[in-house]
Image (cartoon, rainbow, N blue to C red; front, side, top):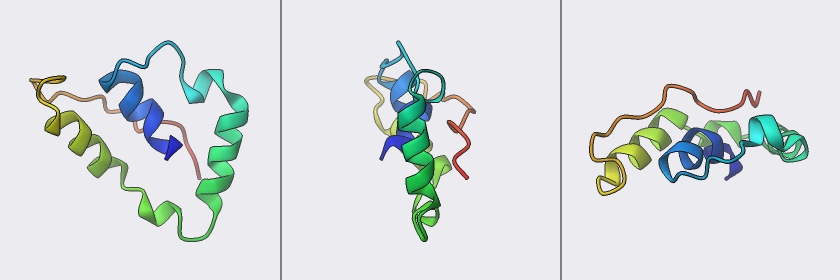
Length: 75
């Protein structure tokens, strides 16, 4: 889901020319609408998502360090 892009793909996979938060207002608006759909938000555990991506790809991130930012406010 797009909710992973800014907090994970932007930094971890070096897709960092632009962010959904700052550069794609229409995608951000769509993402917020999807996130507001009943039961969708409860399926997104950003702490778990970030921990998984940043600590399981040791060839990309050997130190396991990851950003504190959880991406755009969606609720």
